[in-house]
Length: 375
Ligand SMILES: CC(=O)SCCNC(=O)CCNC(=O)[C@H](O)C(C)(C)COP(=O)(O)OP(=O)(O)OC[C@H]1O[C@@H](n2cnc3c(N)ncnc32)[C@H](O)[C@@H]1OP(=O)(O)O
Ligand SMILES: O=C([O-])CC(=O)C(=O)O
Image 1 (cartoon, rainbow, N blue to C red):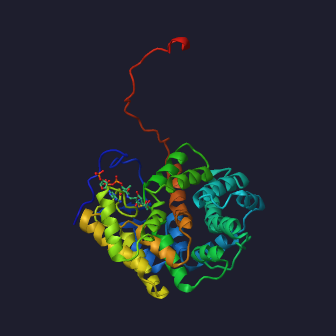
Image 2: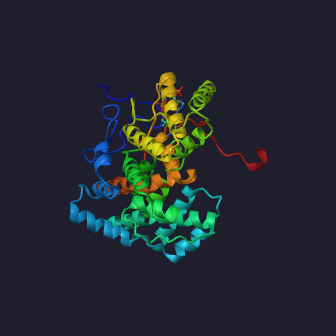
Image 3: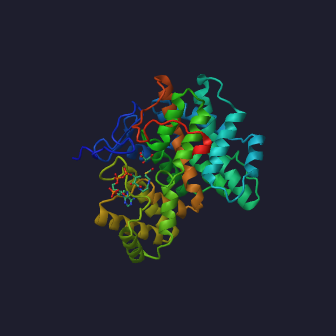
């Protein structure tokens, strides 16, 4: 069995930047656990609320604890009017990740975290409100509709789809969304989580930590890769066309979004789970083109470069099959990863020293300022 990727070089790769009890990533080259549970076990047997509870509070809930937690989250879905006013001013051509960043920041102005004793409550509020927040903006800016975010949805997975399409979603789609939110929930010291921890280490408030993390997740080398993967596969007519286009891209040394990983060396364990859901959705939709194209991309990338699909690649086809607009893909990641980010903020606060690494200076030698007329 592999002992994992050889980690060294730029980007702080391989350097231990702190401790965590929340998850392990790629310890044996491929695995992922949240507080000791295999992510595949969680995705097969839990709802997202159970996993959020596990990540944020340390243990899986029993029935009574889960019912109370779900009831609490359900009671926190309403958007404050001042937040709706801000969302209504953001244009339709804004990126929804920027909407989430602004929405999170605005919420921090309206419902400040005055003391760290409120950290679980402000996190629960964000968890409850984020799906409705982005979909309220989406429906208002794109369809002129003020969608009701205080739905009867039983779970956050259902709430996201319900507030997006303004109707009760079908059961298969809710199941896929449960799995997706679980897969994306936590991933050790990835770039966005590290952003949140750096911010937390200054003893800043939770909304600032999460706002910063959203900004880091947005980039195509991180969470934004699921949108970039969709933009890639939608250009491909069929599996053979996918192979030709991909070979051309590799020849031109272009980066293929949705492939490769900073830590995993053999595979990303989340891929097998979302790939299976993508296949189910393809058959349910009676249209397997995107799935077939994605499978061929996976085979070509492995054959040519020994690069494997990360969590993002098959999320593209899965979300598309559920009628989710591409630009809302990464915001779904936010709705999920919020759990990991917040738990890391709490962990950092519990044993804090300000994060402040050093730099190797590579600039000019000391010199003195010339009077401006002589420059
Ligand atoms: C949920 C997530 O955030 S998962 C990650 C999502 N991001 C993506 O899918 C973006 C595409 N992938 C990538 O850019 C990278 O694989 C990253 C950012 C994820 C990891 O970066 P690194 O740790 O630097 O990658 P790694 O060290 O494995 O790269 C080794 C080589 O493979 C190449 N490579 C890695 N990924 C890819 C890719 N997707 N397409 C083409 N080549 C790639 C690198 O360019 C590098 O080549 P080089 O040595 O000639 O420069
Ligand atoms: O760990 C990483 O570098 C990126 C990743 O897969 C994630 O954040 O889910």
